[in-house]
Image (tube, rainbow, N blue to C red; front, side, top):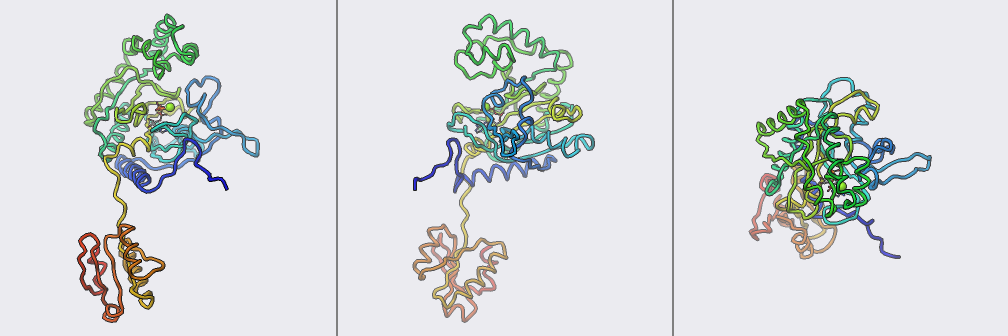
Length: 412
Ligand code: ATP
Ligand code: MG
């Protein structure tokens, strides 16, 4: 039969890749808990309307990248391209939108986007994320960012990573800014890419995010939002950045940052690096004050971020080492019962232990070395009769006779 391959843009996580992946998620989960985030798991597919709300959607994610399909019952479903919408939908569907706000939610899991696969960009990828739901205060923006920075510090990967912050202001600021952008981009309309000409009509802010070379030149001379901010939007931004400094999170302003999805306001930020080539954004987020309402809930100002696990994994300074178990080796078949007893004893004591299923003593020693065992517990007839075992350190080659009763303590 023809050999089947993984689908384009998907990959298997095996060995070192899986260990990096696990390390990123475990670390993020641990640090997020320190900040009071509780973990939620929402479904991988949702009603398409959770992600796509009417014709106003101009983001690439919604307009071009979604994996949507009609299921056998005729419903339009979508593999989630991100988890913020699912978390907001869950807040509303579980009747949690009314009380006990703010809620701080952490999540981790696979996301799906139909994109051109390249290094750091896949069709199935994974995100970790933190959301603070139901907090309008700038301290929430700063705290969620501080948590993201802390996770990166705990992963030892902050070298060359910079936090860039911007504000998208409130509705009034954005209306004034949009007018200024339309004036600027209209003057260059014919030089814009086809995509950006569409954006000019629908959502000119999105042109700032364009990756097209020609567009980038026109973006370079576009006005910044800051002169168009209302006094309260400017005060909000000043408070967020002030709190960032108080949390000891280094940041710099980048007036070109807008978010890929349409429901953001005020704070927008990205952690970027030049260590990943074109896929330089590691963690990205912002404030979204209208999303829970769009899911049928009450007004619930919220802020959060998502980070690509594959990109974080690539930035880990080194892969976590493979586990090194203890190999239990019966010298002949007659010692198998004692070997199984030793195996049980070690595992109950929390020590990883392995046994080969077949082979003579030599074969079993070879296997112990092949799997990277740190020690071999060798059980021969004489040792077993005296309640002992030979304990061989496979790094140094040293060997000693030890009472079985002391084995676990010696190996811990
Ligand atoms: P990009 O500009 O790289 O396309 P984005 O703005 O689409 O990113 P977000 O929707 O903000 O990304 O997602 C947050 C993070 O998820 C990104 O910063 C990145 O680390 C990761 N990410 C997004 N899309 C992919 C993908 N296709 N493959 C791997 N990681 C991804
Ligand atoms: Mg994208």
